[in-house]
Image (cartoon, rainbow, N blue to C red; front, side, top):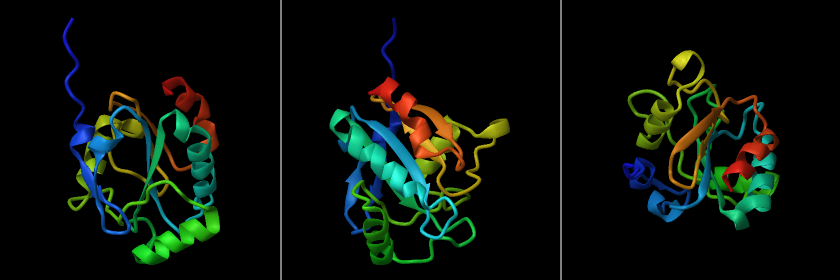
Length: 164
């Protein structure tokens, strides 16, 4: 029996909306739901479902991590303060929100390059097609599932409970 290689997810870091650099090492042992988000998208109401999952399962080890992205229809045009204010006042978001990132292309954040390689989408394509694509990571740091934009956060509950 060979030991499992350490997960590279813990080698990443990302900047929070407030500018604080966060090492993913702090999420070791947690179940992660990583989502690219936007404030002016038809799927934006999913913030409410994401917050609901966070409230329900955070004590059991779930972390929801939101990454605003302006690559799809310029639906995240605001700056950090606007994004934070909108998410808190409109949806009561208390889970960590990170600085705006690209999720596709040469300038994509390394985390999203890793996620899309680990869990390609339909037809094996790595590119993220739209806002609110979700990646589920188990407690060992393995990317176990990818969900498209149309999958509502509430529909992930069975998969989350299986990992928690």
